[in-house]
Length: 326
Image (cartoon, rainbow, N blue to C red):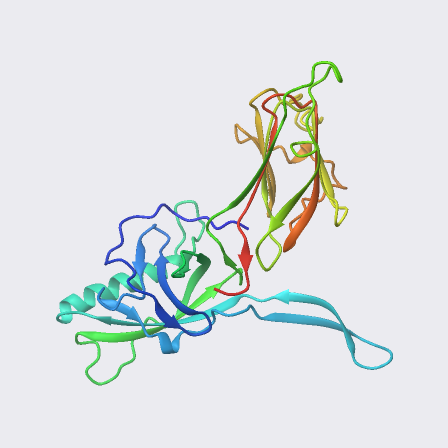
């Protein structure tokens, strides 16, 4: 699933600085974006605070809870592997030119992390975003909530102009996400004029078979944008047999075929179907047989079919790859 973040604003300190050696992942830089959209560099030693890399943990592969069944000939057989929420330990050293300077930075950072536990105007808690960036330009992000640790170390001389906080961050989804989405678009071709009197679409475009590659380590749940004209939309995963059909003329919505330029957006996690005006079109799917399928790592053979397609018809599939490690 893609990550939702607030718009980024100017960082309160300098740029993240050169990469540092972090346990489990190697050289990288780190930033934290709080729910308000403020970006906080975490690995720049000149910014007033920096990461104590030796204490960082929780950036490796997710942990799993295994469910097994006893085997009659001895041992057991794995039935299910359930990924567990991730816990990240992130020690920060905060310093200032004097006590007032230090205290202002300490309080600002504490607020930035604990803000993840406050409900917004809509009553929803928004996570922060921890991002790990590689020297080659690659980035991976994870949504985090503050759990504990911003209480200082109470060592002699600390909390005068410096102190350290060993922060525990809790992650609902244990997987890291590439913030750059993968988008696959298939569009209608020019209709033929004598082989078929109706608009046609080649197998490499909207109708027919195609392959969607998921470069990540785990399944992803894409979103779809269907652009008309189209009177019926069918999407199937040829590898698993899972499929769904969207009928814009279904009794539950009473719209009629999609006209040129009209759009419907389908989200697979959580399941949601919205027309371009925001109205709920979940009733347009062929329940109870509909399965809003995901994409496994690697190549996924899929089939698209748009009945009544013509010039301008398109299917756009978008997802953010997910990874076990940062």
